[in-house]
Image 1 (cartoon, rainbow, N blue to C red):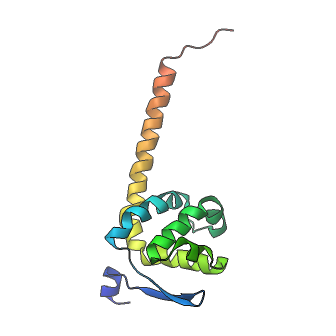
Image 2: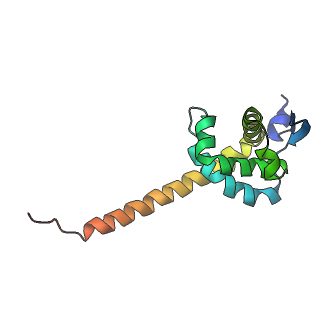
Length: 136
């Protein structure tokens, strides 16, 4: 892989359901809908690899929608893929856009989750500060 390939991710072509599909880095117009769909998915992905079956079971609709947006195909086309093809395609979408995920999506999730934790802690502290222990 050349330095240019590392800086500018190249499209990956894959044949699925008898059709060749190009998995390319996201375009700016795809990002709003893609981010809405992929954010809950990324919250499920841990550092120890991806448990695809669990991910599909818990966030499959979001993942399939994100894949559909990323490859520019209707969701029905993605839904009609065999399970192994859908997993391979989802993995390629994430791989081709890995730089985008690591620089944009994951830091955003960290900020959102940190803010959510801080807000939840503040609400809990406020709720317990005003309470008095019950007497028996």
